[in-house]
Amino acid sequence: MKKILILFFAVLIISLINAQPPLTVIFTGDEGLSVQATTLPYIKVGTPFDIMVHVFNETTGYLLFSPAVSCTAHLQDLNGSFLDKQQAEAHEEYFKVSYDETNITIRGLYGYSIHCNSSNVGGSLTSYFEANGYGAELSEGTAITFNFAMIFMMILFVLSLIGIFVFENPTGKLACYWISHLFFVIGTFSVWQFNYGYGVSYLGLAGIYKILFYVSIIAVFPMVLLSLAWIFYIHTMNDDIKKLMDRGMDEDEAVSRAKSNRRNKNG
Image 1 (cartoon, rainbow, N blue to C red):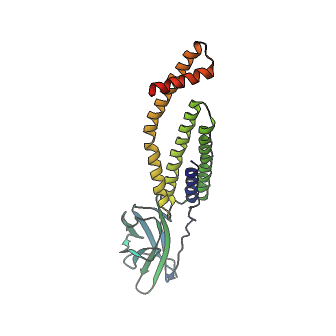
Image 2 (cartoon, rainbow, N blue to C red):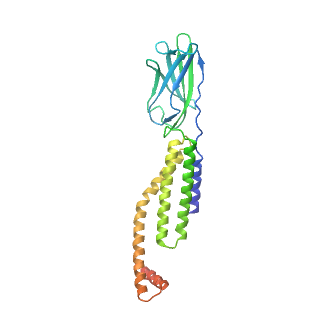
């Protein structure tokens, strides 16, 4: 039991400190044309997204659009691997680059470059975004709330485990078991979803907790049957003890005689 608890706490602590720092969006490069793009800094894995591009003349500040200007977009991961190149779609006052759900299928950090050219000047923009399971930033407030909730749940989980060995009453032991099992189910599910949604590295942790969650859910069904059998056993045992005490035996002798009778019947 101690080894299981140590392993559980170790894996949980690793998952709690695996929060990624906020991503800084970087814009670089202006060479006559000012290129501005509107896109979210966080993208959900496996979903389509668009990048809206506006191009301005740096000198006059005028908005430029097709056919005076054309723009090309390059998408790559931070390892430098090229993912996609396409011509930006021209609209009346802006350009749009559209990516479908097949472009971003793996969590991580990505970058894109947009190059725009007119007849005699050009401009570029480079930016970065993060892809995760939620398409949202892991804010400091969310991380702190999650960590405190998990710590509080671990304390209750440990207390319920201690109760199993401390309480002499069978009903108390059974209640503590189910409370600890419930906390284990909730905890594994929460950490699984947290890592799945926000993690961009060590994603094996999400898989580990997913397996633990399903194992704990499946274990509910045989444990319900065992609990019912235990309740039935305790109920009949109490009836036997009561009958023996009604015959004049004291409680300790009645308990010992009832257990002995049960062993003889089962044997």
